Length: 191
Image (cartoon, rainbow, N blue to C red):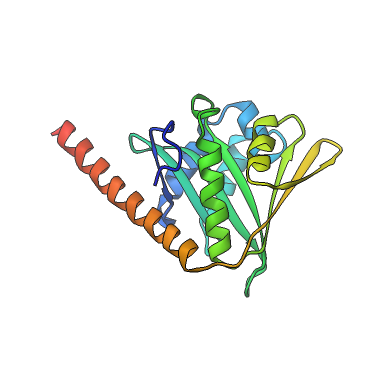
């Protein structure tokens, strides 16, 4: 489901078999976007290693797709294995798609997903100069703490309820349907 009408793409959860798409997205990030995502400059080799294990059982990754190409991601990674109550969120959006509501839409989906997994505390760490990410965190009523060159955002989630579970189920269903239609239309165009 597209939570922001300004964003022309589709947001959906990544499947475990989409590691290559995730890695290719991270490799397309410009130097500044890579630094914002990982907190410091990183090499292609680092990204290759990171992407190979990122889509695991301890994470939920939402992707933002435009014309079938992954252009942005929101990673939700739980702290602890059994009944985690805390998690970290991280975001990466390719430069041409920044400042168009994509980060905000991904944040909303990530918060909903965390809530429905009974994650009470959601943390996001960003660099102090990453004002767009701080603005998104404020939009979702995060508590921000400034420490040296970093900003730690903390969001407290309410317990999941039937409405929050239904919203995630509907978003997943809409995303799946849109993805199937997108694949079909691309196949027809190439035929």
